[in-house]
Length: 387
Ligand code: PMP
Image 1 (cartoon, rainbow, N blue to C red):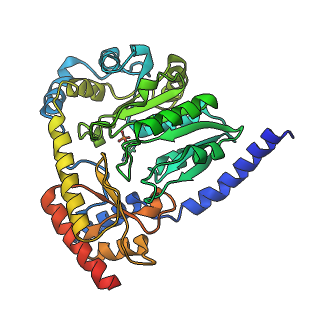
Image 2 (cartoon, rainbow, N blue to C red; image 1 turned 90 degrees about the vertical axis):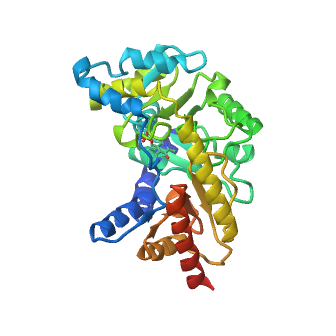
């Protein structure tokens, strides 16, 4: 075997062992499920672990739901989505036509399609941690090896170009970016992002940029689309911006050849995204969602203030809807702490779900009253346990 084929085989074997190990980790989802079970027993839980806005979608969504039946949407359709919606989405982007857009049932499925269709078993991807766990899980599921780059609080969650270069080898095919980031809220400085894209170009890597938190960001954020890189794939969604998580609708922006590949698997597995929901999303584009952005920004500010007051250690988020923090206590174990906190009625997301961050936890910026209540309990349990 030549070296590349041999290392691909090795990657497949390694993946099997990683799959077994990752099953035992506590994630925001496993905590959420435990919290739900407690609620069913009649316990009250403050959900600081969830990753969805707790307000309603815009009123345009309600009107669209009322009229969609009579409009006749509800047939089989194109795997890439209804043309009217793709057209409107394309118009909002730079240098983009309808051919560059595919509607998907959520950004999660878009990520799955990109990883599964553009890469082959034994290929490698780079994930910068802390990261939303699905990137790794999708890769593992497709027999693709993940090289993680660990960033730290001390380096402001910024990867170095050296770290990226060191992770690249002949099997590396893709790097995944997610800014504003879940869980840290980080937005990379412009120059660093430009250097990462340049590195990706030099090594002919796909860049999968998950921009689902684009609307929840400060003014310094910009899309990877400005680099005009023909191997970039951008995923966006109505889930966060329009508070439409359960509607399951998002989209991908990429070169036509990439969209064509991804749409084949979408056609195979789904036929098409629900037409009524696509119509609803089309109408949702008329909504002014700036109010949601302001709500999230204000909640994040409140969360930052409380977290400072109680002595948590973190980098202030530039966007998204979370705070990723640790405590001053030595040997603090966030997984154990989250279990204990749940007994006191507050759910948080343990850091180990986002990579090798056992001492960190993620808190979602929910409505201010509940947030304050939850943070007071968190502070009390923390002090009782560690002082
Ligand atoms: N990307 C990131 C970074 C997320 O945090 C989430 C959801 N929490 C998603 C994608 C999934 O989005 P969707 O609901 O559009 O599938």
